[in-house]
Amino acid sequence: MPARELIRGVGLGLRTPHYADILRDRPPIPWFEALTDNYLGDGGPPLLRLEAIREHYPLVFHGVGLSLGGTDPLDENYLQRLERAIARFQPAWVSDHLCFTGAGGRQTHELLPLPHTEEAVRHCADRIARVQDRLGRRILVENVSRYAEWRDSRLSEWDFIRAVCERADCALLLDINNIHVSATNLGFDPIAYLDGLPGERVRQMHLAGCSDQGTHLLDDHGSPVNAAVWALYRQALQRFGPIPTLIEWDQSVPAFDALLAEAAQASHIMQDLHARAG
Image (cartoon, rainbow, N blue to C red; front, side):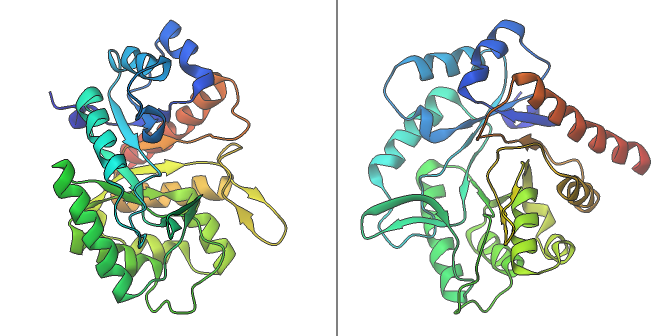
């Protein structure tokens, strides 16, 4: 059976402190998401550990290095290494962010939001299409958190995402926490955001924690999913159906049991809505 057919329910993001728990206990998690950029080398312990996990679980890849909205040329070396990793681990799908990560040959190591213009739609869609042609597969693009609006923006974020996905014929990784953070910071309606998206292109969702900085919410992936994000997740499931969902936790990574509890909460919401719909 193709790996993509096995990506259902609620998965977890692979993090280094949890490798031993996973390999020892083989918890009943249906799939894992690997941070692509950690596995682009030619060898070493990370690749061996990922191979060991891949023997027991389906994988998806999630990266930060394509800079799909950037103006520098696509990184040929990065694409070559990504191709090798895909061939080696056979992920069900590959995703990256709808953003840029640097300019003029300099990397910021930040996910920088794009102006929502027709020009940016064409630019991003062209780069995504070239990546897809190179990899021989459709990729997923993820919405990022935002803290300010570009003066030149003319489209809503959801209209921008819809236009890029349709023009590039790519899929969408919908980060529910990022919608909540951006909606709170910029004052738009998160339900209007969900309603404006191309539901047929949503293939995966992310859930994560954020922190209140007083003047704004910060997407830090360093705490449990909060109540507002759980509520928005329920709305997203009602809108799009039981989309495979991932729990992300990157800062102050807790014991593995804490992630299992978050996954159980997401699974409960998904199953409850499915039962009500049935």
